Amino acid sequence: MMRSDLLSCIFGVILLLQYFPPCSSAMASGKKGQPLPLIINTWPFINATRVAWNTLNSPGKTVIDAVEKGCQQCEMEQCDGTVGYGGSPDENAETTLDAMIMCGTTMNVGSVGCLRRIKNAISVARFVMERTKHTLLVGELATEFAISMGFKEESLSTPKSKDIWKKWQENQCQPNFRQDVLPDPSQSCGPYSPAAFIKSGTKTIAQSDNERHPLGIQEQNHDTIGMIAIDEQGHIAAGTSTNGASHKIPGRVGDSPIAGSGAYADSTIGGAAATGDGDVLMRFLPSFRAVLNMGRGMAPEIAAAEAIKNIALFYPDFSGAVVAADRNGNHGAACHGFAKFQYSVYAAGFSDVLVQDVNCQKRQGPGKDDSYP
Image (cartoon, rainbow, N blue to C red; front, side, top):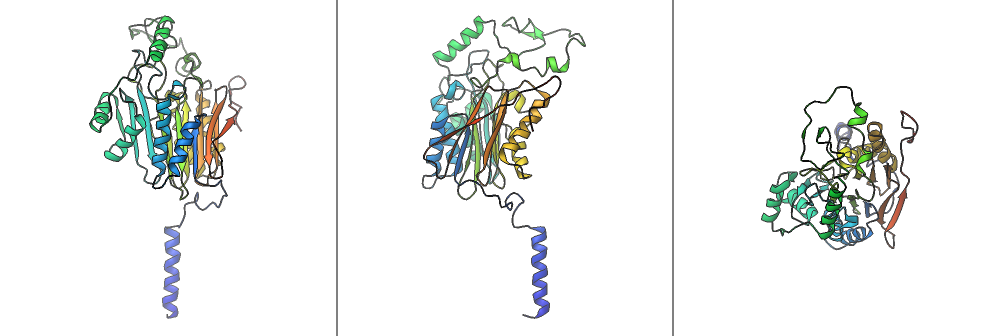
């Protein structure tokens, strides 16, 4: 090869590397992580973790299969009464379901919101991802789609969920998600109509819009399962399943089926999932933010803490948590408002699921949040 040709080749390679770098900054960080594969999910739903792990390590199975089967296990077990049928009845005593699944390699997403009379919400979400060109289907028409795809239609109510609703009625429908209506929703079950006139200045924004404590949101009634799966090749998937907030207004959809809020996956960076007060969480896209933070070089627990901190600045008494894992297998979580938070991990070299405890942060001091680093 002549010298001029060699120089041309070298110059061409330099240009290619300049404009088409072989790895993203996240991939080229060189950080030594934990052995892969990895399954991580919110709360100590260890049977779901085991099912996902066994699925991922079965011949021919993928991270999407693992997330679907793991969340499906919780739906069948009715984990803590907050996943699957028979829990969290709305104002009309009906249980509805939210779910999503996301492939971090293709960035495809499928989700369902306010799904009625279909038990297997996570699988319907997968059908949305794989059998349609849409991302989210909701309500009665999502049910029609599921039936057309072969899913069984059946009631999601149980004697337990009906009893929960009856006790709520006997307690003057408290807690209650309505505001600025008549009769007073803090003392009445309605029916409601808009308040004709709201006197200006009677409430501050923080008092009226941002107060969450009276809703009774805590770890016992907001245990959405959010799951992340990473295989040995670094493919990542994430998913969620929940029956939403107890006593919600009919038609309400929470954060769980919203990509970037309930969960998010990017195989070049990592994945994250959230749980807690979904009406607040979806306003900040904490799962997307946590993944973005990891892409900027933050460790998973710091990435999650930053996402949570941003929410607490506006809603200091909200309750929620974020779990995160990077593509190298490092994982962590952060939480706010819960008395405690735990997440489950199964990774290469483990003999069984490990449940991790996380100390939750709360607002400290008048007028400021100084509980985060």
